[in-house]
Length: 125
Image (cartoon, rainbow, N blue to C red; front, side):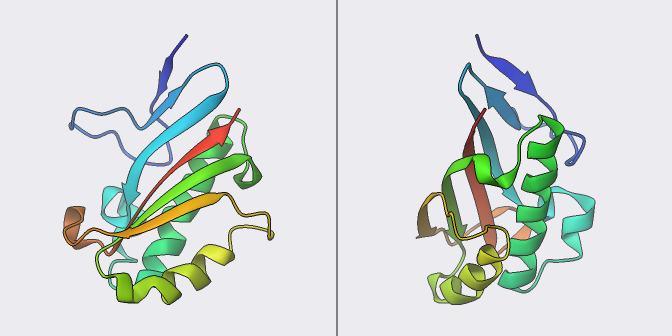
């Protein structure tokens, strides 16, 4: 059975998507950029700051459904410029204790709100 959830950690969007969809085993989080939530807007500019803001929001969203970052099994990172990979990677490491989820990182030139990083993930319930 699918359940849809709008976390308090990020404001609801008028766009046609659900922020979190859960089935019996996984939570699927929609892509998130710093421009999506008020606290994140202050982070716009550097890839490291945006990465921290987005992963912080993801951590808060997971907490709302009783999960922690160690339950994330897969992450997709979109960078506006792949040359920013190292800065993103260094900030990303701060959110995991060395047990990293599977990850894909790609370049996506145009991200919402002039963001430089978009992250989506799936977590085991």
